[in-house]
Length: 411
Image (cartoon, rainbow, N blue to C red; front, side):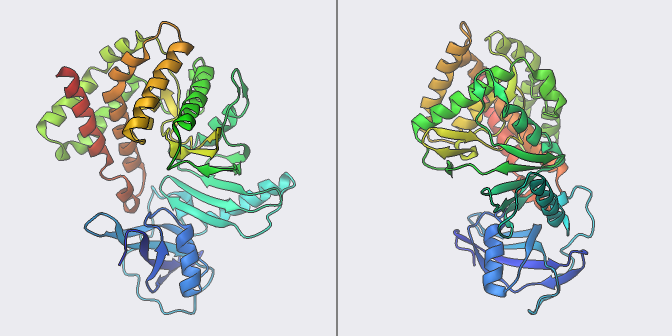
């Protein structure tokens, strides 16, 4: 049984041809988070003697507290293993038009071959086997040890395909210096090779000083990009300006309507209908539309001390810069959230004299929640059914929040 700190795992094994062989005996893997593949690969090697590549999630059986109790994955092996396998049943869909490239047999291997070729073209050689780190509907991540340090291979879905291009753009010299983003070694339509970044991912324990530095780095980027909206949209970034949010906001509401009560539906519908008027009020606050990170939080920053790098630009789009403030303050404790809001306001007041970022943030609050619902509904619309478990409840959560914030304004 899962204990909240680990996963019980079964692997449905297949060959690179796609032929399904059967289901492995059950084993335990560290960490409960189902998208983490490295722990599954390590545990399969230690427990079963398997060298496997995790392709995709098939099923999650959860405990009453919501933590995974048993997780089934499809995993690729080179040959029939000398272990007892049970029938896989009908758990593996033979074909799915929304399946990601790395979730297909042979997909990860093709991406790794591309990586080796690109690195060799720059005189870089692998010094050991590539290590699978993560796989789910939003990305596939591998670590490649090389003679010039670790390199990271990241593949993304078509709706995140602009990530490599925007990181490469931000890595050039801007008015505020070279921006603090990863170094792009090579990129293709759906994948990118990134140089390693020293330090730690700051999911937990970032200080108030570090959080202020994160905000300053982002605002520097946003000031540089404020006059480049057409260029950003041409790279494929989604448009989150308020008129453009109306149609996807209405779609998210329609798709989730049966899980919202009547008052929530009415509040969100009124919010969507009034976006044009709200946009004018927000524009009067004086801050320009610009690049939005889209998932800005301490966990998407890596570094040590105040030497920080902003990661994960797949969620980026074009919209009001304070959309990022709402996401950030939602993921830190109350004390740090208040300090961050104050710093954001002061930083933008200094950057754009005469602006009113405090009022803009207040007016944006329900819009930011609506945008989150739009994002998650977009994931659900564009990923295969087995993987929707990751995001299934998110549109309902965020539309409910948008309704509360909208009703709170009226109160």
